[in-house]
View 1 (tube, rainbow, N blue to C red):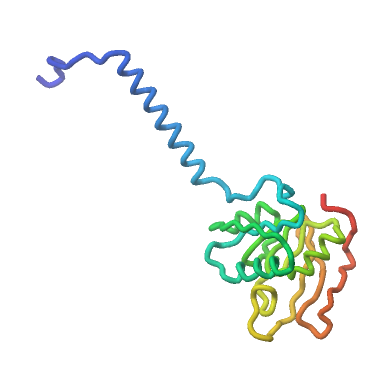
View 2: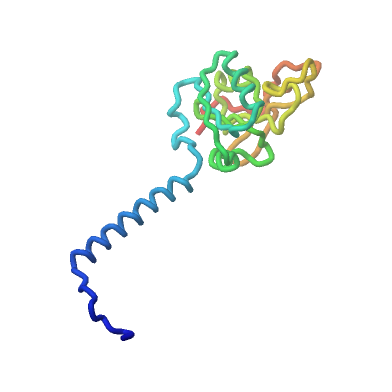
Length: 193
């Protein structure tokens, strides 16, 4: 009796069509769900979409110093929008942050990228002068920078102006006897491209 189809009902064409249709719907739904799961971080396609002077911050969901930096910006009068991103390296790559200038959070404001614990007054100066640059960065997590306060201790650190090729120059100095911002000689007063 092996190989015998006796007693089996014939399969109707409409049943096969229904199974093919259901299978294609299931595959389509699976593809959509997989695409959403594997998508890039929620970095907006156009940075300038935020309201003027709104700082859009991308940070790890577990970073406390990032929240302190956000509070520093809000106290300085900035409107801040935050996005928790579990894969910050993808955000930094997409926004063009040089690896050597990396810190724990990345932000955008008025077409510029802000990397790390950049003081609000440096961001204000950047927006006032509008140099041709990618943005500002405070590499690492220097003690005493906004969000990294530890009592009265302020280690010397620099805010760097950087371009799209990864070149940087000193925009301002902090934590020294002369902590007033120092203009970088390469600042060009043209808007960013």
